Length: 207
Ligand code: AP5
Image (cartoon, rainbow, N blue to C red; front, side, top):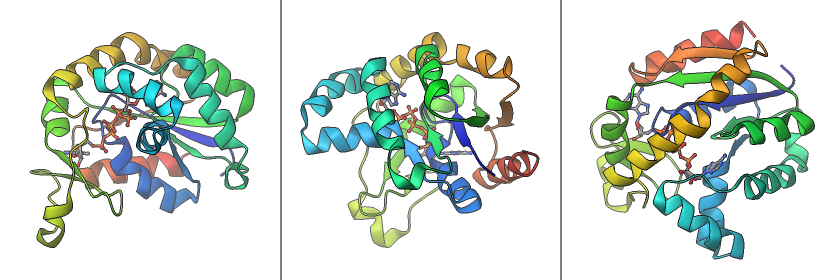
């Protein structure tokens, strides 16, 4: 399969959880703007410091910063046969810029109602060594690594509500934008992780 895939959905929809499986199935590298921004924050770069204020407040980082990051990332060799975008694009201007520089062949939208999102986000834990994503109830980590798990700074109830508001206002309209281009495939994300994974696998087969 040539071209790039976009994984689309609200915060906590399960984009990161499903991305690893899609990478294994398609061989396309995962390009997560959230992970790239968190790496820039950790490195203390000027861009990272500027982005941090937006991220901590649950707001979207300005389009020009994000588009610059993506343009740079797509120049790397491993992106030549397409990538899996996770959390990008998130605004119509980002999608319009992407259209100029990459061939998006499908957009998988993971749909989850708002009321399920807060519990998912507040209970999320990450393994800083492997990047693996867990949940204290829905996907518990093995006991031997429990001590090293971390919680993302923006995974609070207050911030997730701001992130959800940003999603509905700025990102949700993209679903129709991609549907108009016959690229949108929707998956019910309000199911067990394995059921969602097999629905995505079926969707990928039909592409
Ligand atoms: P980003 O890192 O992209 O965060 P997000 O979109 O808010 O998505 P999340 O990572 O929170 O959720 P996810 O869908 O990956 O869910 P996960 O699999 O972890 O962005 C962070 C910030 O960076 C943004 O707020 C913004 O400031 C900035 N940013 C990033 N990209 C940007 C862009 N393009 N433009 C502008 N700004 C940008 O799952 C969540 C939890 O639920 C986990 O605990 C998991 O175990 C659990 N879970 C997953 N699936 C299921 C299931 N089926 N059932 C039960 N639990 C489940």
